[in-house]
Image (cartoon, rainbow, N blue to C red; front, side):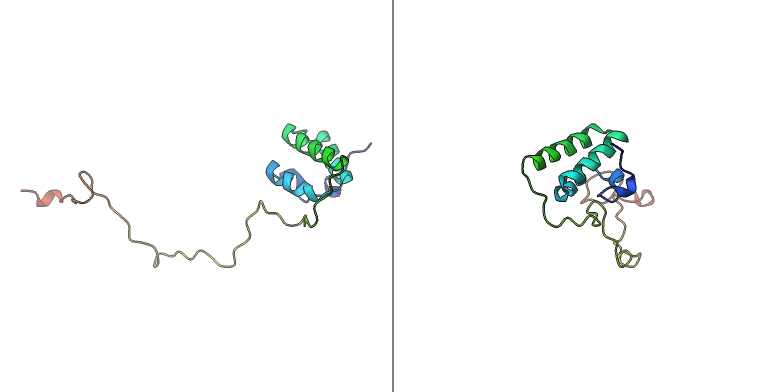
Amino acid sequence: MTEPAREELPLADYDHLPVGSLRDRIRSLTAGEVRQLLDYERAHGDRAPVTTTLETRLEQLEQGAEPSPGGDQETRPEQSAPTRHGSPVSPASSAEPIHPPPKGVAGQPGKPKGDRQ
């Protein structure tokens, strides 16, 4: 059996997916696709949590589970969506800095040293 190339894998950026995202993303794959990922994982990283996740899903599929509908593999929920605009915060809209008193109670502000008698 030959190992699949990274470009042939059914999940985009497979090598960079966190285990939690992988668990969700493989639910829409067929048994053959999960087996393809498992072969690739064993030949490359052989990460125990990933291998276990893939083996578990493969067992489920072989016992009659069906792939979930949908599953757009180009959608990457683990990455935040790009923003359209820059930050709404600017120096003009930011709050005034807070300077707590050096000692004492917050409700009783301290006096500068020059004002002491």
